Length: 123
Ligand SMILES: [Zn+2]
Image (tube, rainbow, N blue to C red):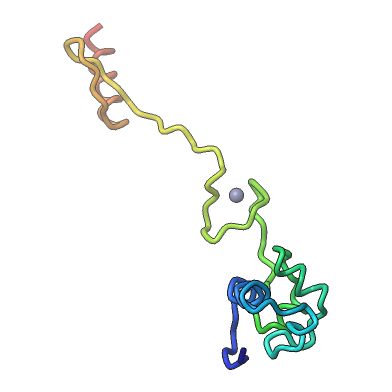
């Protein structure tokens, strides 16, 4: 295995570990000597293989893009890629209705106020 790719993803690294372990039946000691694993302990490699999310020190050694701190949402505490929170309670939309001849019609606020005015005047 060659470390010619500058930037790896954790998925790629895990895939490589899986191939070396499951297809080539290499020991962790042998895997640790491979180029892509240089400097990373056997224990860390084994844990990554089993799903462990490595920190930035190990990510750097494996050529994986580093994790950067991101501000969490004040509403739900999660990190979003968009500026809006999908978990925030939605504000109920206020519609205006007028009843004409027994039918409800959805109208704008201005129309509602105008009709209310007319009805108030006719009373
Ligand atoms: Zn949120």
